[in-house]
Length: 377
Image 1 (tube, rainbow, N blue to C red):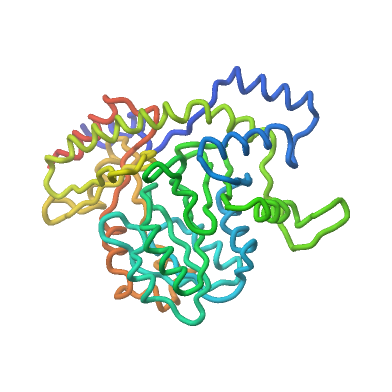
Image 2 (image 1 turned 60 degrees about the vertical axis):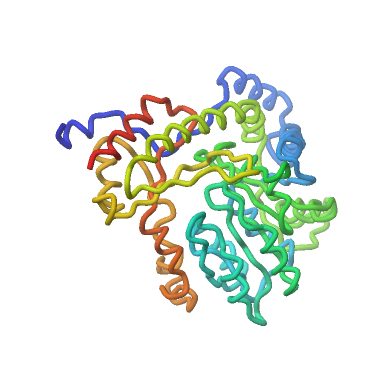
């Protein structure tokens, strides 16, 4: 089959948004119109916060208009506006951008070579007298070593903010991983397991902190004529909150479908030399947010990029996620911790990873087509 023929195929994308029933959504839109309240802590906004706190098993949650603003606001809420924050080079750039926007200096520590999460030993080695916090990422929704990181934070008097953008609904030993650290943030972007089109949330541990966060996301207002902090406008509107309420009703089914796809992938990939994929972690309730594979070119016979473009030619829109590592972007190139010697594991993962399509609309036929292309040497 030639490349011209390939380009006419319907592409199989890396993700597909979870969409609510159109009829039900229309009914909620009509109700919003009748209430004449479109934003600012409205009826559906409150309902969604309550429903999400219950579903996720967290004490307090605040909704935001996207997944980046909770990161920025968490730092503000903890009064982290100067110093160094140890974070991962293996993530989406929003993780580190949030630090820059708060006047903080990102310090990149290496990750473990299997899961891609921050290596606690590398974190401790990077601590200086300017370190004020740690910002790890639960990469692909797989939990960090939260206990080890908390011991380090307690030992050095540091705050921990988890970027849990991928970790919606993930539990470890029966408890939500969003309870770890001082705060956790979520993304509800359309590409995520659960979405509100665009959106996000910030999880905290006390009613007092939630009140402070809610004030910061609403310009800093503490009353009708009182502003006590330089806040920002990052509230979620009623339309997206209603959309999110409907999606919450079907997210369990979507995750179950993803799990079936993951098992299909793993069973087939086990017999292909040079392809490594991640297994489920004992004691963890996964959400199957992504399905990364890692390509060993010497054994597989193709480089990662050769496989990536080969898939693309066949209408398979996979993603090299996360590539490149954050320090390789021009905005961070001057960081001393960006040097290759400091983050070998992160670079090795970034240079070998491909995230295969993984979403609730992916059927077995799609999965087998993808696997047949990977298996052709």
